[in-house]
Structures are given as structure tokens and as C-alpha cells.
Length: 72
Image: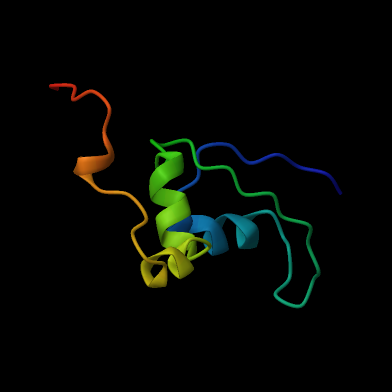
């Protein structure tokens, strides 16, 4: 069986599967795509932990190394 379910709340997924007659032990292939605002890529990177090692790295440059200062 191949079925696409659109716009289902995560908490109601089990109910929807039961309604379709899918038994609890049945194996499924599931693709999850959030339709709400997703996290910005920087937030995903920060929460993923891939850059945690940078916290232990020494700061190599300071404001004194700037050739020209920019105001934001």
C-alpha cells in the first residue's frame, strides 16, 4: 500500500494509522517533512553539536588585529 498523508499533527498520527487499518506490528517507511517554520541552519548546526569543539580552541585574533573597523 502506498499512501501520502498531508498536514497531520504528530499527536494524531497513531489515530490516523489505525483509521487506515494499519496494524501496530506492521513495518512502514516514513518520510517526515515539517510544514511549519523550520529552524534556521545556524540553529540546526548549534543544536547538532558538530561545532562544539570550537569552544575549546584558542582565540587567534582580537579587535587589535582589525585593519579597518566597521560600524553596524
